[in-house]
Image (tube, rainbow, N blue to C red):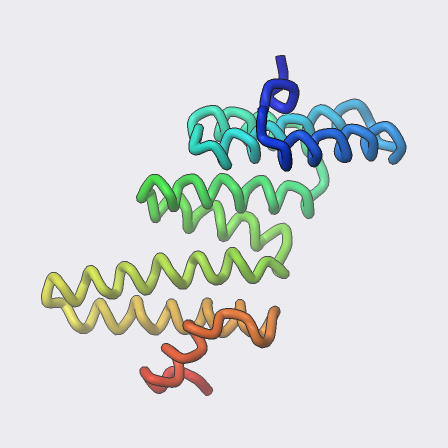
Length: 168
């Protein structure tokens, strides 16, 4: 039974009902409908912290989905799971892949910046200021890209860029 039929969350149920109606109304192929079902089930599992199940659904959605824009969101969500699991190298890979298909994902740039900033902080704790600065510089570049796409967002990052004199 698809996850969307067993989820007890009101918001998830409402989303599922609306999504099912749209899938019936909007002309899509059966493959696109199936891909969306896996994507939706992946989001539901991810929201409940069932990351292994979410990944299985996302990988199946990737197998079926052909639209690059839609694939970018699947890849982004896979990156989120790897970030949550502390698998930062894998997460960065998936964020890059998402941005290759859709360069207008400020949240992917932000998450990449957060990972780079975290790695910079780790390098400081290990006493390697040169490596830390390289990570911080990379974080700054990603935050600038995120802010360019969504001016007014990422206020904390904006302040960090100003304080560290990385803002141009």
